[in-house]
Length: 620
Image (cartoon, rainbow, N blue to C red; front, side, top):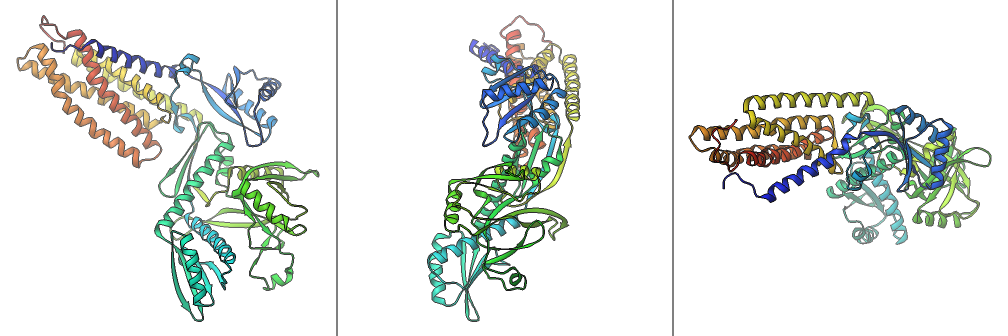
């Protein structure tokens, strides 16, 4: 029989309707302003910590809605945004460096909905408010650091094999290293040993006067891998720093070949965020040179194995070029005060770093060890390629005499104040950036503007929906009512699907995508209804006209929606930020609108008019 669905199809459709309503429902309950308290390395959150937090809030005359301890974190729900800000300041001061207090918005979703995975839509930065940074990685410095590391590695490898060389340095015009030898036999021996253990490098030998020169340069593949590694490592480190800042639901993602997007919802202190995210501070530990006289060094009589740095007071200090270990081996760092009340940073190393430090200090008791503080700062000038120049600053933080064999834990002093010690500890915990980064774009969106964007977006969607509903009702009468019912369900289905997808975020352009799909959804119904009218005018029966209308319009609807879906996929693949948000909602809207416009409306039409031969006229 024409236009009759079997019972299983109605049951399946009812299940999809119920499922969509269920997962869209959490968005009706709203969110509570909340605080999320978590521990940094070296600290631990226990039930006793929850008791402390509640006591601190009571002292500040703040009555939270609830405070719970789950998954190693404390979540405190508050009654207002004002209470939230005051509570954050109170807990940050009282709990100290070992804990992170993050602003958050906790969904008020009922427990039974949460139990089945129900959660409200995640809102983008333009709807929630916060800070947006576009950061650029200095790839030239990343390659330069890779060259410096290669110099260190080659020097150690050649010395270990007792292969004598006259000098080794970075190549100026090539992305590699130049090694000089006294004779051709030694050069050949070096090539035979180094080539198999250094894949990704091209070996070229030449003769300059009486010296034999070996150029070890990066291949194109190695150069690309080095840049990708620098970007990926910086991405990981920035995520660690964002976690240290205490931001709930941040976004840190790659953009292109040398840029990173960072979005911090709820953060309004841009100065603090820039200070931590853009900082490139790290440490290097060098043996002190206690043999070379400082006056001889300043006069130019400096051994090739040593270098002059200045301390914080501008005094010159001679240290060995050899690096005992770098900040990459630091796994934890905590700021505190020593027995004299001076700021210090207590450092813990990984197992490899601990072994290296232990081995060096064991054989150098009574000798000096220098801590070199390195940071990169923008100069405000531009390079020839239009990118900003970055200045590398190096200074000796302190020179200490090794009193005993050190292990994985020790401390550094010589810092100016407690705030500097705190920031340095934070950066060292999060990791040292592989290459310097600089902020090339910055936007701040206030929470009130975010709410205004939500209100305007909902208003635009409501006006568009009202216009479409009125048109369909007036022009297609009862069939228009069916289309309107499917249209409303389509919006519920989009919200439900986006709420189910873990990484989906609703942005202002995403709301525009939903508004666009409203028009596209009725477009499919318009094609179907007009086709039914044509079949009726051709003299066919009502049941045949309905059947032909849906069947013949399907291919046209499918073609139009598939081409739009391809566009959405391309936008998602090549777009960034808000463009991706638009592409996601558009793609979901296309899929749901095809379902509701074709299968949803047909199920309703079949239920009302299907299989009835006594109908004399259709209200269409």
